Image 1 (cartoon, rainbow, N blue to C red):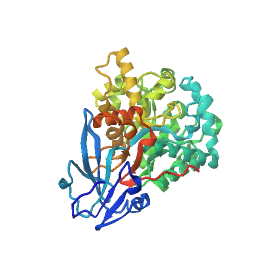
Image 2 (cartoon, protein in one colour):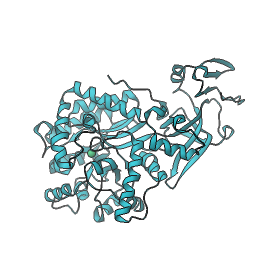
Image 3 (cartoon, rainbow, N blue to C red):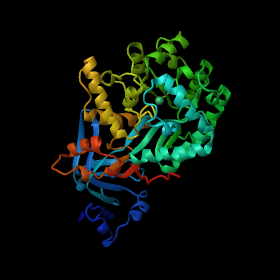
Image 4 (tube, helix red, strand yellow):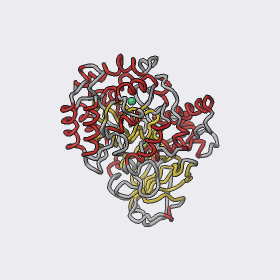
Length: 470
Ligand SMILES: [Zn+2]
């Protein structure tokens, strides 16, 4: 049981792993039985100070580690400061919550994921990109015309993201405006952050998923009118599926929407060599695949994130740098679809912004901690075959997944002052059976842990409770 003589503190919540029945809330000198319900009810109304073993990456080269440290979070959900001792923080009127021997780390950001492909997770993993789209992806997305089907699948999807501690996402929906709206409402209901895209596509796809340009603009504008508020956790993102599935008129309309409403853009880029050859045929005027987006105002004119970039180099890489386009690196779909290995070390050295994506269901795993592992493994294979300068380290992939990715949402992914407090409380006792250092404990959790060790999740300072599945 943690206690303190700090008289300024309003309350101290203590968490004892071995004796949960005896947890107590100490408030105003009175000791009362602790219930999680009380913790929730009081949680979002005042300044908080959390005590735990705090780890995060301010720089990609190393972790900041505070053993038994403190992080202060304002009523606005933003970090005020981190310190090794309570006396260094202004604790007046603060509620102090002691998480004991647990780890406190930034939450995960999934920078590229297709929510309507949740049913196909782990299915058809032996196909390449283009046949996989035709035979699995498009037939499944057609089902999202049915709002009831969409709700049952989207609830399951959101719940899995919550389980694994993913508090922000860049998400593809489908062409269907109503089911995309529903997905946005479900994120709002859950309190989790997301940029959600109604997918634009009108060629080289089944009739059921093809939408004419006017309908695409109208559907997007409906969602923009309802959700496009500057500080909202859930906002629209303009989402042309990829160049082959959008006519020049549709790409133009997407660019106009992004620029008119100052909305971010997401799409796919240079994933597969057959796809790149196809784009070169479709857009002969463009100097590269990326330039095809650029010509329609979809490549950094507003904040832009492009998934994959496996084969990005030369003029395309230069254009991404110049336009500050972020890469969503999706290591599992790179190898599941036999696309290749993205040169992430080169991207970092060139100063490109990079985040990590699960790419369900080209990727098979919604656990973003596993994505850190896969990113390191893919990087090691790339290092072997391409003799890059060095493979990625743990602090680098952690930084990519948290602070670097989080920059797409504003100040997210770190515990530096002013950052939104997106955090996970990890109880790794089951993995911590010897004298591991805190960094070893975090590494073991990343490699060996799962949702069972995530005890609490926070998004923008709020405790996020388990969303309903049905
Ligand atoms: Zn994708």
